[in-house]
Image 1: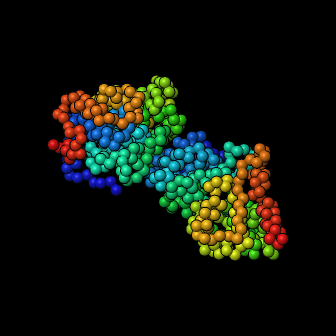
Image 2: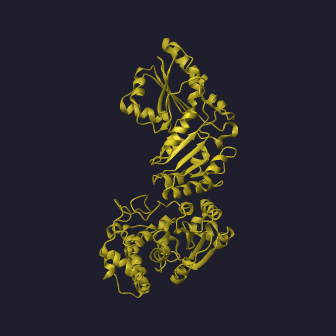
Image 3: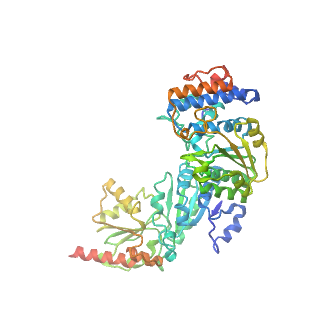
Length: 295
Length: 288
């Protein structure tokens, strides 16, 4: 059972939805993500940082009540959990237990227990088809709402992704938007080294899908791209940086896996705070929760 | 909601006409088809997913596991040609380990109709179940003139003083035809099992196990993960040990040759003649 947000959290969420608070939202979310991964000794921080901006924009500014979201790159679960936390859908206590014994926030999304999380992804190449199924159901039932699916770039090695595109295009699922976090790095090399699919956007267009390509860390560009509604399923390729916002992580393969040392964590926190030009947060503080966002 | 992996020519056209937009030919893309079905089911629909048996359980196995079973979604996988059903079409088209593999997954139940009349009963029930299901279809071989008992997952088809023969699914038809003609101490009790996992085991069956000269389990499926292994474990755990125990299962391609379903059944000793030979041999050995 997903906990209901407290009045304070609802107020926080409302404040965070205002455009003026975007930088604060982004900073707090990034700090909380770093803290969560550091305390749990979890890896995959690189791909979480590359997709965090997109998930925040999507959830705070785009998703309506009848929209649905599928995180196909399940290894970015941390960024998803933090995003849900900024919305008051997850509690501080949930994040504190992330990736630890007894948690309900496993390293990849769980199969039950959190209403917003529709599928236990983590094995790549499932999300686009799952989202196509959700979109097809809306089409058949004449229901409103869009379905967004966030994939990684290495994920497009999976043949099932292309099966999903074929299906989505054939069925004219104009309520489906596929998002790609194109950070250029996958598990054991760059995407160009492992199985070069560039130019990836051209391949989507060859399937007949309108495709936009934007800087995934340019908030206004991402907002504009998400608001454009094409006829037929469409794709937004966001060009991002793995480990975005932390100098020693950016575009580095090892941050697909490595947990942070304490020194690395403190440096990461310092960089995020300096970049955002905001006053220092308390990096170790368990009080850095949704309620503290009001302070 | 019905999805097919581009199969059904000259069979599914009436269904396509009846369902209209709720009939989807998802093309030759079974992984996508199963995940799409999961998405449909997550949205409150009840999708049925159809293909030749191995293409609907083996190719998209991870999609079944992660997308359907982990979420306990009511998706019905329909596999045509269980066991050696596709005969000389070859090994790629056979489903010898389907229910063993699928029964490892959470929440899923397997349905193996033995007779034509079973299909309607099982299909009707599958419209209201709250779990994933695999419907393994095969050709029925109903004995001429036989009175088939009303549907139940476990059914006693005949009684006799000899061995107890439990057969899974439609393989029972041909065996029942032949062993029904046996008389005297040779005449076995015959049961058919059509839903898996096999628990709960009915008390009547356990009673027959205790009375029988031995228990013979027959299935068109490899031994690993099959009914024999699971039932033996259940009987052992409950202390219901048969006087003797034997099992016949699919054994792949013993000679490297291919043929009809009947050919492969003979090779594995699953055909009715082989079962009669077994019972006759055991009877003679007991007498000696």
